[in-house]
Length: 157
Image 1: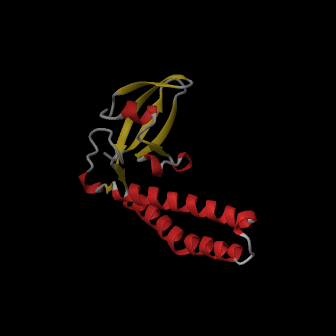
Image 2: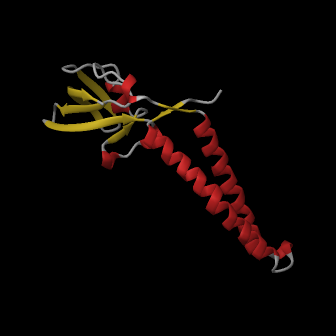
Image 3: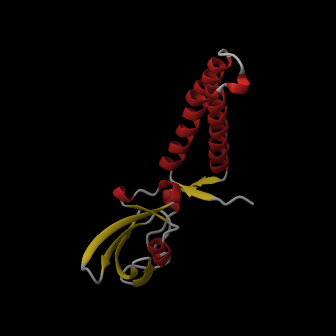
């Protein structure tokens, strides 16, 4: 059974836009490359043709995976998200206890994670360690670099 992925509306739109780009632009480009290579003669010794066919196979695989991801994705309704405890789509303001530094993360699906935007995947040790916690609680989380302790200052959406 396929794993369900939870996305924001923005994340679902990005996936659909990418799928549409692959189908409407990339697929015809590769078909054109195959046709051009085919016109050059003997296919058994045509490296251009082989490369184009391989690129086509990779593209079709990517399209199939994207379609499967979209099919198994659910858009999260922000109005259904509660801000009393940390969960997916929570925007969490934390205090790194050891470094006395505040950080803010939004917990999102893996496909939407972007550390520069402060979005961390629900699959990360930090997100997993914060899930279910409430404002004022602390979480000791094992990460590859050791153990971090965060105090939850705020939870929003």
